[in-house]
Length: 141
Image (cartoon, rainbow, N blue to C red; front, side, top):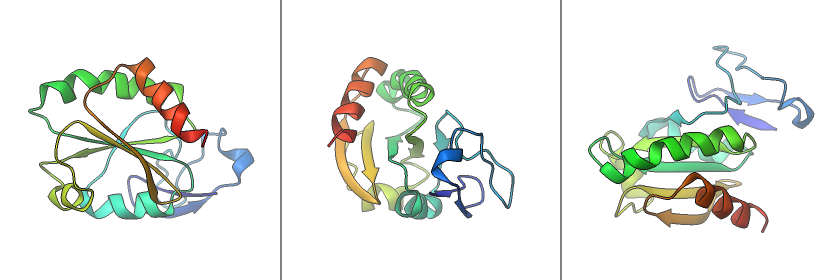
């Protein structure tokens, strides 16, 4: 199983049966399966999505956005409940290239990637239970 380190961008190979053993990056020792969202930049996002073999849920948000601020705790709570999904936050003001690449027109926007491809998109703030149900629906396909 390939996992990209959110800190240094190194691709790490972790046996699938060892994913729940708190693996760390071979280069920088950052936890690879932390059950919390990680912030990524324009430069890091593309590799993270394309190489990481687990599903990746990206939250496109901005610091000034009230719905984004309201949804942040729900996104974090869902990350703790679904450790088999990598949760990423991208600040649209700091990452304009990623926002343009993924055609972000409103925030918050959530995009679920699997195998490097977009499989689902959700615009607007949702509760943790709604987010879990939405993820389970799209991951079971």
